[in-house]
Image (tube, rainbow, N blue to C red; front, side, top):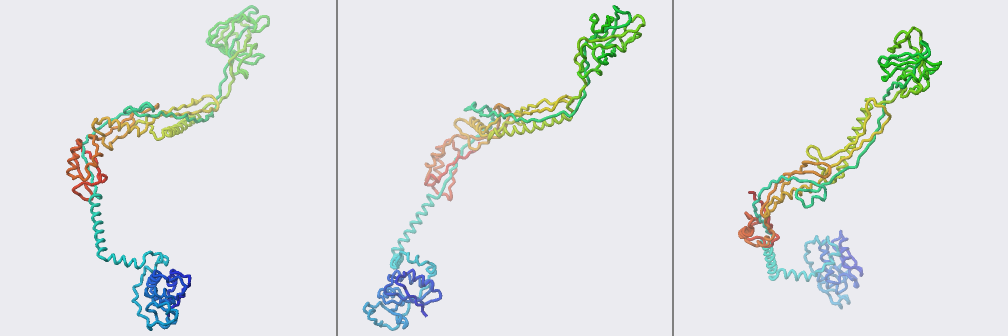
Length: 574
């Protein structure tokens, strides 16, 4: 049974197409068109509806009392009915009725509907297209028919054959004249150059325009310093230092007042053991009093030896074991010589006494004795202290050396620091402090190590440019150095601080007569290859051979465009 689809007055053709799309389960559809409807009032609407009907494999009928809609529907091939009753009876219109017949409600003459035309094969592509796309098509069916008729006419076929032949000819010409390329190799005899180059480096600004001289840079780092401490860990006892001065002597007993005796000293003499109010001491004649004879006066009027100014002074040194806290002997002190004897020499001091009566010697020092020191203990550096100080100094020296060498590289930047094969080139200045020695007395010391570095730096690109320039200077005036020479390895012969250095390199290259190929590329275009060879050999005296390669195939002429021709020089070794 057919499904009735009532068309609204405001519906467009796209709305009817959407209804066909949505009627998936119904094969037979009937559009009931109102007399005042907007849809299906043009041949384009009916053609679009017919195409979409075939695309979805539907059978669509039209019910309309409008003579215009009936006429367009019949012409498009839709079964067309005036009323729903005629649809139920199966009586369709064969031709568009007159307007008067429609108004009177007369029936159509024919009772049976005409046979429907055979349904064409479904248009699958049409079914996938949106209604808006169908409506937007500018071609009218009548225009398509005219184009198809022209296409199949003799004139259309002749035009297509002519166009195809023209495209073919143009393609052949493009292949023959535009696609081919040619490479012309001009062989030029080359000669080998071996050059041992020596380059001198000077400070920047002193090498401009000078062959085999490059600018350099003198590098000097700031001083890197570090301090360390060393302390003495040992102790030492210093012996006392005896005080020295002069003594005066007198004696009592013996010959009495006004008499004198003579003391003879053998060597430095023995120690005088004395006692008195100033404490017990001992004195020994010094070297200035050795082996001397001294006249000792008798003590006058009970006065001590300090009053015996007529007696010579005896130079002595005090006994170091019996000095005071200052190690010196004060002035105005008096003692009695306790180990004197009247019968024998007293430790080498032999008094030539007459008689056996006892005598006593008195000693005094009017002036204080000086130069004496008490025994004391002091700090000294041991061997382990000295070894530790040496190790610290060496470690700091190594650390600071690495630091200034790193600073030196930073200062050089992209330049190379010059060092020869023996490692010479970087000058290190190490300032080490004076280290203590074993047994040296002292306190904790703070010592400083300082290191600076100096060197010369150069640019490898400047050095290689100098080698290349030197190699070019060996080429004759009518020749030129060929590309890609071997500039060798830049080696440092001598280097030091201050920017002065010497470099060397062994360079190898090839030179050939000058040949300018640029002007001849346009002159050989479209020329026969053989003629081009003869022409180039005649025009280029330095050329020894000419070889032409064509791609992708060989032709009896060179490319028409100079941009498709490439001229290259090839070196031919002697």
